[in-house]
Length: 148
Image (cartoon, rainbow, N blue to C red; front, side):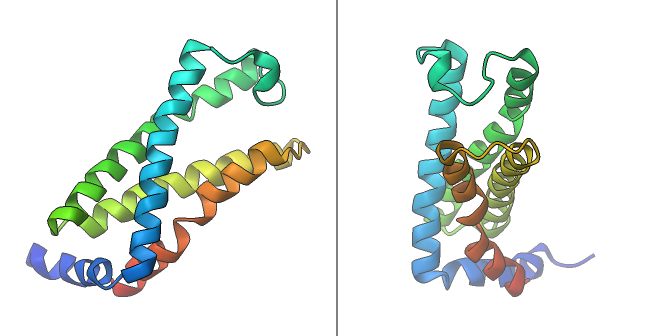
């Protein structure tokens, strides 16, 4: 069996050498992870009128679709916070945690975009934030994959 340090060494080097890409992605990741938690608190407590939420928000099927993202978004947030902590400490698992969190975040954004586009509903209020979720992780993910 391979030494775990050898498996994580290239990834750790990619994180350490990330520079500006790492700093920008970390900022975006933490802001997104906090945003996920705020979003779900708003959805759960309903302080915002339904008319200000997304299209067809009152439809129980659309609400069920939206709630289906809760585990994905929470997993992205929790692994993002763990990744940020690992990066600050210089932990060996920082790259793996970053890749996991960023992959989950990009997946959430891509799934939401696919759903609304397949429905033919183009609302910049939802397209732009989900495009951000899909796209901001990609540069650092590319570095992490290339280093592996």
